[in-house]
Length: 117
Image (cartoon, rainbow, N blue to C red; front, side, top):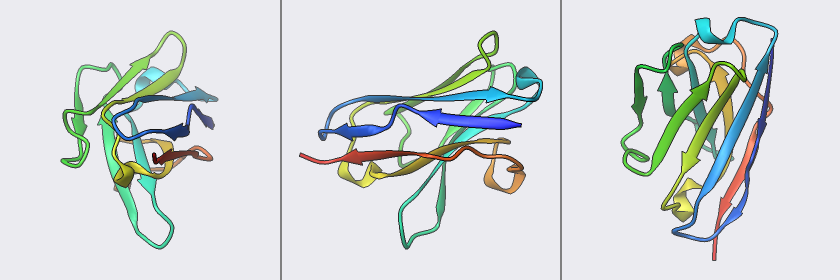
């Protein structure tokens, strides 16, 4: 199993970024996937999860209405569209296999998102 995160970078407040997670080594469509983030010195924060077929998704209150999770099962890729970014969204973001944190068994290496003017 391999999960490779990409798409992070520097964005201004109010800006947008799109994260991607390329999955391999397992039947991608059979598994729920999610995004989580971590700030140094703070705990892991679940951001969003999506079911295997993409029909069900959920978001943390802190990102609801601003972030959108999606997946392309034909391309074995998970996405996170992040709009209206805030400085408090600054974190290391990584994708994981599983819907919620207690279900994680594999995760990517992470991609850094920095929101600053």
